[in-house]
Length: 99
Image (cartoon, rainbow, N blue to C red):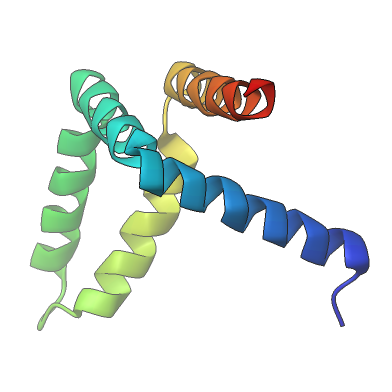
């Protein structure tokens, strides 16, 4: 069973996410994230890793490749990108409470 604080946090996350989507901020953040990851070579690295992994499998299994690449991808996002995106989201939340 989830604790009240967990359910409160989930509700807050859902509300912030909804506001970001409705305002167009979510799409903007995703575009910036994609550009930053591409600039850092992260996207190309992940693509090449997936391609190499698929070559090693006979036949390649999409779910297996996706699981492996997702795990690797989450762990290799550059810290500078994480910090920048977190700062943008925090600013959005701050702006929402100031209205």
